Amino acid sequence: MASRPPPRLVVRRHDDAGRTRRGLWLGLAWLGSLLALGLIVGGLGRHAAPTAVDHRQQRVLLGQIDDLKQQVANLQRAAQVNEVATRSLRGTLAQREEELSGLRADLGFYSRLVGGDAQRQGLRLQEVKLQPITGSRGWNLTLSLTQNAKRGEETRGNATISVEGLRRDKVVSLDWPTLGNVAQKDGMPFRFMYFQQLHGTIVLPPDFRPTRLRVSIQPASGEAVDRAIAWGAALSGNIITAEGDHDAQP
Image (cartoon, rainbow, N blue to C red; front, side, top):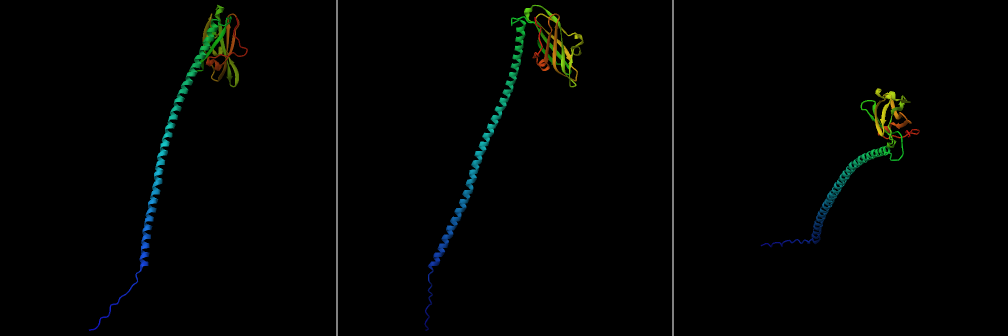
């Protein structure tokens, strides 16, 4: 019987270094995946954090804008209330000033009438008023005449006026016959002991611009009264004595 050959044994060297390298690479890959995951999570966190901050800032700014809008609305309402109150106050002051002016005129009138200055005074033009007649060139005229009550005697006569102004860039004067009523061609007659109001109507030409009135009061006896009054003063009822004008003396 033939003998069997002995089995061949192959002896291989165990590669410890290769296993170590593979383990190292696997570990590095695992760490790399962890690092990548951390970077991704961190990036998402950084992106989400500013978004949340922006939302908070937006809410704060919107709240401030609403507060400012409310303040503006309050200031506007306060300004409107102040404006209404100011207009009302101005109207009241104008009314009181007008009443005060009227009271002063009345005081002067009655003081002169009863002789409050303890002096005898003659015929006087106390007040002049002009009122336009709507839709025409006519004007209603009122003259108030007084004399001191201490005189104790009646005075009578006639009053006339003339109007000075500009016509075609020239200074002209329109006398009473040109202005007055035919029924009062000689003037407005008066007869009184203490006071009297005279009423008349004048009509101005369309191309005439008045600047002042001149009132002439001629009593039957005694010195005449001659007064010049600015047109604007006559409209307001305030008469101003011009230089050289005078009232009658007793």
